[in-house]
Image 1 (cartoon, rainbow, N blue to C red):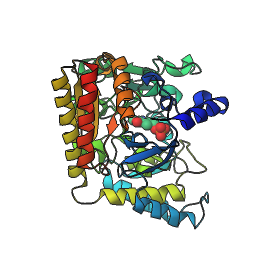
Image 2 (cartoon, rainbow, N blue to C red; image 1 turned 90 degrees about the vertical axis):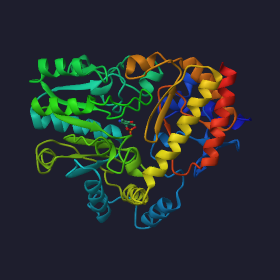
Image 3 (cartoon, rainbow, N blue to C red; image 1 turned 180 degrees about the vertical axis):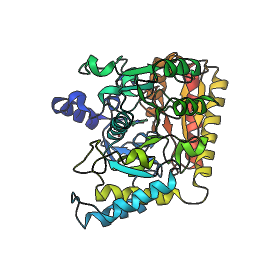
Image 4 (cartoon, rainbow, N blue to C red; image 1 turned 180 degrees about the horizontal axis):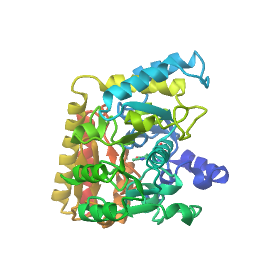
Length: 428
Ligand SMILES: *Cc1c(COP(=O)(O)O)cnc(C)c1O
């Protein structure tokens, strides 16, 4: 596979962009190769600037649940662009998408649009603090909630991938208000919340963790979290930036039947354009300016192109059996990967919830950050490069999920299983 043009582009990019990339994991450092530069994408495939074609399981890290360059979404955006790209004033499209979100997500009564998942989580935490008058937040090791200061403690995603504990530039004064505890540990959760409940504004959680690889909540974890936060007057925030509109149309909260107070959305809600959102109980949301004192604003928030893409994306999700079919595809792939590992005789723990999955190179089980870190990331790196050489684009990190989209066909998934068998045998 020739990647000459990508290599040259990367050299040039590194001169003008830190690391040559606008988000760290894209640099492919942890898998020991250089990134390819993408020219275009269609359906389940992406194409690089050297003309190579790849079957894509990154799916822009989640948003492309219908595959790339979906016709309906492209039409919605091209129609919208003709009317202008930003007004800084209310539009009908914002109202339409907000109504769809309120209808879709069980616990959301009101919603505010922002431009990224990071903005959504940052604003939700500010709101929880403003609402409760308390300062401390609780998060879980290995969960990622965007790159705002308060969250960069034992965070997932690129923070784990690059093996950095937190980040310079985050003042101690801010970090002292964040408590990070292990995922799925109900005893420690209860102890922490009971001891410090009077100072704790909120608990923020990925209801299925997707940024230390895919880690499911135990059967009782989320219910216990809901009980305790309710009892102790702590705002419960579900960060559904990945799980929203993916595990079900109403997200993880619909899937598990557990209602948070606030929910953060991103990724799928924008259909591939930059959108985030946070919403929840009306009495809490009414604390936001201009109705309330908690300030949050955005020049491009509710952008008409992004709203048009989001509306089209959500409409496609309303098709009958959409989630059933998507999950069946994911299940087929996960079963194939498990069998491939067994027949090659290498330890792989396959975690899957709906259409999110990660094959961890470890005996397992993987239930939290510590057990995820027990994976052989070097072995993953070799697997990643072997798969890429066969035209299959996996996440360039052991600690990310593979995203299955409705554009992946059963034949394509069969090919991936065969390629995985080949790759695992070479690893054995
Ligand atoms: C991606 C992600 C974010 C951050 O969203 P950005 O749009 O990258 O700022 C926050 N939380 C979770 C769970 C995510 O996966």
